[in-house]
Length: 201
Image (cartoon, rainbow, N blue to C red; front, side):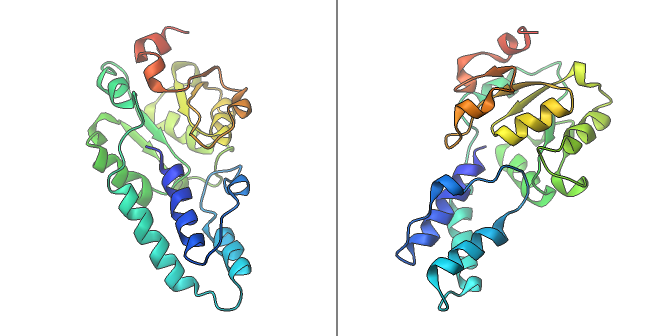
């Protein structure tokens, strides 16, 4: 689910409430985890002394949550999950469980995942491999038995640092050139079936 885009839209919305435009080129961090404090600080500096972070936060989050409430899988992902019988599935996310689990429930596919490993369970966020290593331990698997699917460059770096093969499907705001470390790069999950992806190895 592309929460990167809904986050961006919510920040663009909030900047526009102040008659300003967000510099998208500097928006996305090169690591996982929460960077909200830095983003609010940048907005406060742009707005000036009249900025009220509390009301700004409430307005932005309400808008973001309205977008996320109707968020669905990116194209092709549902088909991949529906065809994943015989595979053990895991989520390895830099986001905290309080963020990840509601989206899994919303998707209707929570029961398809044997393991969920989240950023608040490990000491460092992607590109550090810790959350992938935790997911592998919980699966009882070694890296050679697993394939990672990522949509950010720092996610790819984390997967490769954990010794995993990695398929990248860049999110709409990421430069595809930054995904050279991935073993395979797809424009969309609709480009290949899951069986075709697995057969690459």
